[in-house]
Amino acid sequence: MAHAELDRLQACLNFALDTFRKELDNSHLPPLSQHSPVEHPLDDPTTYLPSTALFEARRLSLACLGELKNLIQSPLDRRMEDRYSGYGVASTDTLIKTGIIDYLSGVPNPSQGVPVTELALKFELDSQKLVPILRCCAANGWVRETSDSSFALNRCARTFIEGHAGRRMAFSMPGFMSMIETIPHWVAESDWKFSHSPEQTAFQIAFKTPLMAFSWIVKNPEVLIPIANHLQVAGDMSTPTIVADYPWEQLETPVIVDCGGGEGGLVSAILDAHPSFRAIVQDMENVVALTSSIMEERRPRDIESGVLNVEAHNLFQPQQRIGNEYSFILRHIMHDWPDKEAATILGHVARALGPKSKILLIDMVNIPNVDATATPSVESFLMHSDAKRRDYSIPSHFGSASKLVAAYSMHMLSMMNGCERSLREWETLVGGCGLRITNVYPLRDHSAIIECELDTGMKGKL
Image (cartoon, rainbow, N blue to C red; front, side, top):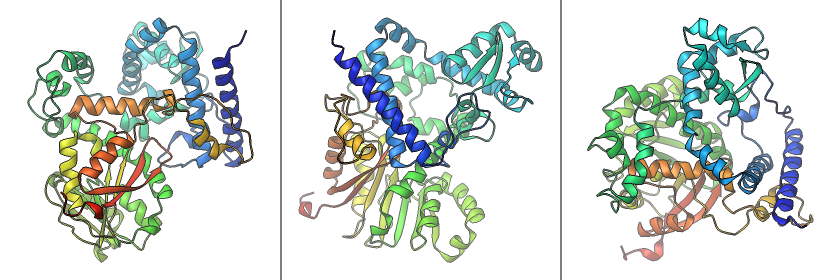
C-alpha cells in the first residue's frame, strides 16, 4: 500500500537531519544533547549566528517534524494539547519564580537530579504540587525526571538561569491569559468586531481600561521593566543576523537613524562592524535618558566625537532628520500598528528621504499557508546545484517552524490591532507612502529586512 505523504515527510526529515548533522560538523560545533550540563552555542542566537545552511537545515527539520505530527496525531489529542498548553508556560514560570531553576543549576552534580522532597523543604513548598508542575516541564523538554520524583535541568532550561536571555523573556503580565480568552468574544460578538483601532482591542476588554496597551504599560511600572527586558532580548536575538545578512557597505548615506532604537544595541553592533558610519538612536522622551546613560558608559568616544547621538523623537511626528545624508531603520515597529497608524509612521519617514536614502523595515514577513512548497528554495542552501531535487511537500510557510510568526501576529492583533504582514501587504503599505520595495533580505531568524526607497514614479501623485 502506498503511503505517499508519509514517505515524502520521512525522506525529507532524513535529508534535513543528515544535513543538519553535517553542518554541525562543518561549523565545528559539539553534538547536541539534552543530558549535557552546559549550554550549546546554538541555544543563544544573541551570541552565536549559525551558518545559512545550518539555519535552513534546522528550520526544515522542525517543519518536517511539525508536518509529521499533524499527519499522525489524533486531532482530538492535538485539540486537548492546545487547550492545555498554557499550563506549560505557568509551570516554567513557577520554577523561575520560586528559585528552583537556579537551585537545580547550582547543585554539585546537576545531571543527577534533585528529589522533589528536597526542593519542597528548601523552598517551603508542597511536594504534591511540585511533582505535576515538574512533570509538565519535563513533558515540554525543560527538565528531566532522572528517577521517580527526582528532577534535573535539561540543557535548554539553562536559558532560564539568572542572568541568561531566557530569564529576561520569562515575564508574566497579570491579565495576559484573560486577553487571550477574550479574543473569540472580541472578534465575533463585541461592538468592536469591525474596529481596527489600537484603542478597541481584546486588550482593553480584558484589562478593563480605555488606554492603549503602550500607555497602560507605562502607567503600570510593575510590568514595565519585565516587558522592556522581554523586548530587549527579542531585539538582541535578531541583531547578529541583521549585521551579517544586510549589505551595509552598499548604503550611500553616511548616517543611520534607528527610529525607536531603544537602548541602542543595534546601532552599536552596526558601528562595530562598519565604523565608517555615524548613527543616531531615536526614541520617546522617557526612554532616551536611559539610552544616553547606557551609550555614555559603553561608547564614550563615539558620544564625545559625535559619531553616535541619542535624541528624543515621537514616531507620530514629522521626522527631523531630513535629506540625502540619512537612512532609517524601523525594527519591530510596524507590526505594532494597524495600517492607518503604520502608514502615518512610515509616511513621516518617507517625507524625510533624499534620493539616496533607504528605509530598512525589519519585521517578519508572513508567508501565506498555500500549497506551494518551500523545499526548492531551501535546497539551494542545502544541496549541490547538480543534486536531484526532491518533492517533499513542505508548506511554503514551513508549517510548525512558523508557529512563532503566527503567534506574534495574534499577539499584536490582540494588543494593538496590528499584525505580521505578508509581502503583498507590505507592498501595499509601502506603496501608499510613496515608496517602493527595492529588496527583501531574509535573516537567520524569523524576520527579514525590507529595503525601501522613494518611488520617483509616484512623485506628485500623493
